[in-house]
Amino acid sequence: MSTTRPSTSFKFRSGSFHALVVKPEIPIHAWFADIDGLLTRSPGFFAGKSVVIDVSGLTLTKPAFLGLLDELSKRDIRILGVEGANPSDLDGRVPSLARGPSQRPGVAEAPAAQTPAPPPVSSMLIDAPVRSGQLIVHPDGDVTIVGSVASGAEIVAAGSIHVYGTLRGRVLAGAYGNQRARIFCRRLDAELMAIDGRYIVADEIEPHLRKAPVQAWLEGDEFKIITMN
Amino acid sequence: MAQVVVVTSGKGGVGKTTSTAALGAALAREGERVAVIDFDVGLRNLDLVMGAERRVVFDLIHVVQGSARLSQALIRDKRIDTLFLLAASQTRDKESLSDDGVERVIRDLRPSFDWIICDSPAGIERGASLAMRHADLAVVVANAEVSSVRDSDRIIGLLDSTTDKAKRGEAIEKHLLLTRYDPIRAGRGEMLGVDDVLEILCIPLLGIIPESKDVLHASNMGSPVTLNNPASAAARAYEDAARRLKGQQVPLVVPSDKTTLFGKLLGRRAA
Image (cartoon, rainbow over all chains, first blue to last red; front, side, top):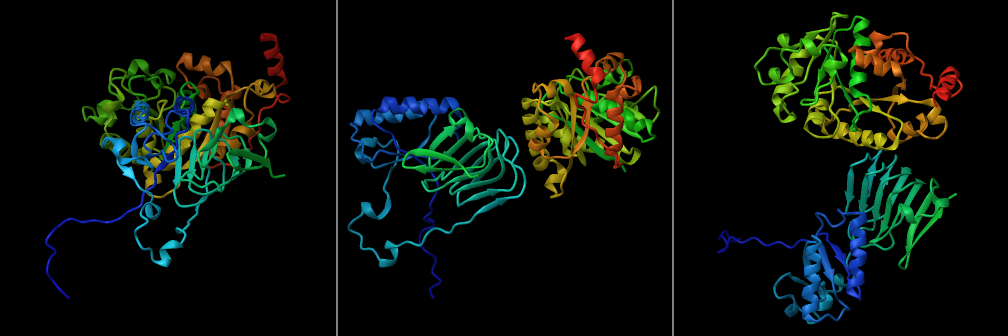
């Protein structure tokens, strides 16, 4: 074994990180109106989050695209990178992100890489009430709460969220991109529920579902809630 | 060795100072040695409610900053000689409270008292967090209305995460004191019921203090209600709460429309 030191002292490693992927829709001004509505209801929605803009499928001119970036930064939405854009349109303002193998057809793949092992799933169990002001974030799987979630508390999970108590706060299931995530609670009194970015606020929840045991899931883009009696 | 109690709520105006004075006096009346400390630096009130405002020479800030000794700053109550007050400063702000200074005051008080009751300021800022930091147990004061209950819930979360005891991995004991409770308004649905509040906060109930003119009157007289009018319903509720704090089993009756028929008649007449 060689004991020669490498000639450079750089260290590289690959890492994967969680980011919120936002996909603008045409017409852009209407989409921004929706964003503004969201920010009015929850001003901190994007605060401290890494955001990736996915413009694949959109045909934007370079000025329109740079305008989009300006509008986002006006709203204090910090962009980590852009996916699906022509790198020359970016003007070097934000990095262009490529989504792995499909963008690099020339690279020969080992068979194992084509069926990647599913990421390890871990679930989080909280055996106490979640109090107002507490934020629980679990980027790896489901969250189960044996107790109530208070008004003003927030649960963010990559998977489903189970509340064996009254849900009065805000819960965001499938928050890192999982349409199949669900929300279960023994008694619904939530301020906001979201699955994979689709959300519903208290005012939009039908009265007969209030105080009932429910489950919520996504059917396409539609937010479904039924009682579990 | 004293038990350190923090009386806290998050929201202002729910009755922390009144409850600190009433519980302190009730414990002291039973022979316990009690020190009550006003942590509301800049907006002090406990001295008024205790009727000691004309005898404050040195206060908590002087002791924290080392310019007075504890023995100089502790004001003995005129009515009960086991009850002492450490007043807050009105001219300084909460930034004058240093972490080390507060820790030293609590440490120095512990051997000489049975109870140290810290009256927390409203809010969740520095004053409130220092008042709760050294507590062994917390009395969470709440009114039966949604904003107070939500703020109390937030405070319980902070008690469970930011106190010294919580940081050592121990559970901090928390008790709910429901104040200004009006069974008539609760019966009409204008207030939350006792069950609703308990369901949300999930901590044991220390007592229910009925809304009462006696409390306001006592505060204006500069006397804890448990001393000023011991026969009043509010004073008896505080006495019971103080006994439960000591670990005694005292049955708790939730005031209802029926049990306060007299009050109901009065309430109607006033309405």
